[in-house]
Length: 556
Image (cartoon, rainbow, N blue to C red; front, side, top):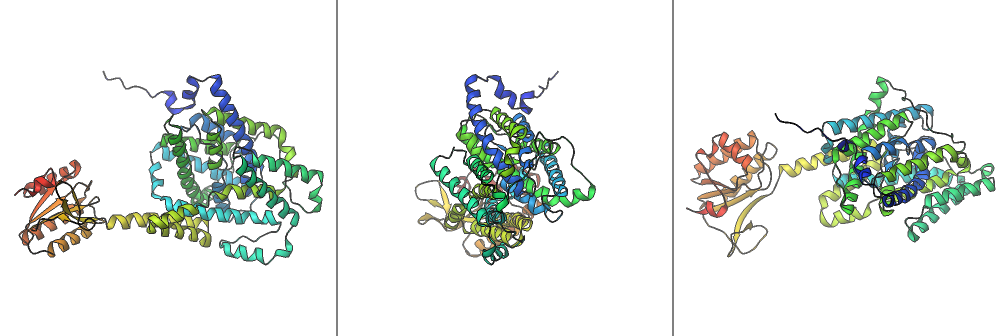
């Protein structure tokens, strides 16, 4: 009898592996990292909740249950999950047409969105479909996040300068409004906003591990309270509820579900791409563990799903907090549990202190957080090395700025798919020649002084042969054969043809017939096993010879 081993509980709950050989020394490092990230998360969470169109308290809720859930189920020891700027911005952009931000209706929609995101992420994990997000290329993501950085910055300028800026999909209209209302600025807000931003930048340059966000929050709150600046026109956070979140389901309906789907899918895709990217990055730096993609999807999903029950905004992996977690030498998921404890203590005891926190200080924290999203270095690199990807990045960037977040993301996704199809429809077809004195063959278009046999054409096709490129391949082969009347042999180097469909077979038959009409013998070499099986099953090799190498195929 064959005994199938049952999966270990540790496969589903990676935290158990962390605790297996846990020691006091590891806890001390996790404690320091967890406190550092938790202190950073409190002001960031409040800022990002406000960015998402919700009261700041919901950002603190997002730093509680989601962190605990990810600590149990996540496979990355350094990824810090919680509220993030891009997800908050996408939630705001997707829901602001359905309800007025900062209202109870908007809050319920945002929480329901988080629940649906969690369900989608867990479903992708269950069906091993996380690879679908790979169809969003890196230039598209870079273009989108760079545009998102601009949109985020624009969305915070009203708090920085103290005026209400009408919302526009086209950011140029917002800039025009700002320039035409200089006289309406609240200079107290400007002073606190740009003053906080300057302090944050200086502190970051001095010591990146310094909790700059916490320091400006404390300083800004104290100044606002001591000088009673609220009565002088400075906008502040106001009353923040005290205590842990009440558990419960958000308001849900079929119509709401349908209306939220576009936002759910966009936030899910961007969240997965960013979170897995961060997790893989720190996996490579630490080399002490392995990130499991589908486990990560489940962990992100359960964090959002359970977070919705605890009134959390949608959560994802954070660039900045993950970097702090890593640099503070976090060793296990216990650091995330410590961060959750810090947030919980803040909810229980510190929320009354946030009443006098200036909104312009929160806006300054957001501005600095999204600065790194503007990836101008990647745009410059692509301009040098790959013009087509540069055009894709710029198109997504401009599309997001001009058309809005949702249409910008859809444009980027469409560009990704179109680019894949275009590249696959016209792959490289190389005529090969031999490097003198060797058995190595290279493209005659790229290398000089290659040995070429007068009556033989050696051709390599660098892609799978399928319906999308089969007729392009046929036309290229016929063109190559027509250029030389002396050709007696056509050798097809199939080393890069890793798959073939029925259209590819049909085209090969066309080429074979055309070659026979021209008195040219068709020979195959370097067939991949899978393609060789396809050709044999189709009876194609019965009248054509297959060889193990180009040298063997050249023998008369």
